Length: 379
Image (cartoon, rainbow, N blue to C red; front, side, top):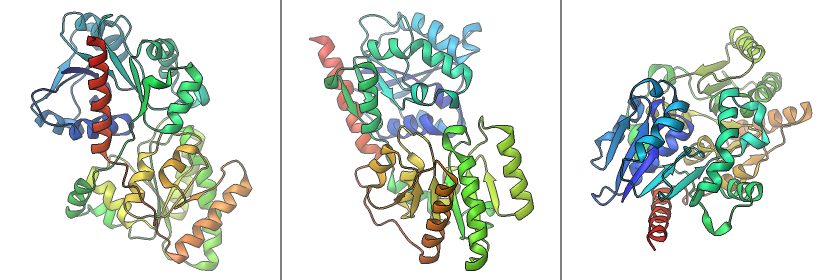
């Protein structure tokens, strides 16, 4: 079975969709009967280069003027190329398919979230335009849709009136053996220098992640801690600067420079990230909306207590083992701060189970759908 895939997320540093694709591909069986052809307009990024060590994964890079921009390549050059390239199935890995796919080529779409419809103003304008142009077409053109959470699948079916029998959930996951291998590597100096009294948040800084709310929470916590006197209490943000407002970054920088207790760490490798999780005292994630929440899942692997916003996808992951608190008002910020202090003083840990969330299970479910889709098309 020859599978073509939108591999553009693998041409950028590891994050979000790129991690989902990277880990799922690595978890697929290594067999000559299963070949992946990864299509992108740019070279594979070094953080994903391990994929090319697999004999059944092949990189195909665009050429010429149309490959200068990801949108032009995907929507114009790639469909023309695929008319001459024999595939059994095309995998739309980031919830859009290129127009003019060969009519007899079945397509499976991975659906990550409905940010376009629920929180459009939190997207970059160009990304919002591209999604608007091709989202409905992509759903209609799909032979099957794989969502990354039950909530995302339910929302997608309701939005597009998509047939339930053509929809499935393939949860993202973790690889415990790989995490333990990464932890055996020495922690870098910048991780060691943080100590252990810190609250951790992991994601790109963008409006949907609601970091402005978390900054208010930490300011409240800083005041509360004057009485409790937890030494060297810090807030660490692991993730790159996204398209947040300049006003927010100015506030973050002001607090960081004045109090020396907020740290933004960018360009972390996987070992650094998991040492960061392991040494943290508490995890925060206040997103307005998420299709899933891999950072939350990773923190729970390390048995960290988490305080998160009240959204269904987080509840799918943490069940009754963590705290869910609203993020709408100043009162909510105070509640987050008080609850955070409670957990910090008591050294609370996560005691639930996340055993069902593995990359192996995700790859098995995805492969099953690929095989069923191809078989149906041949009947």
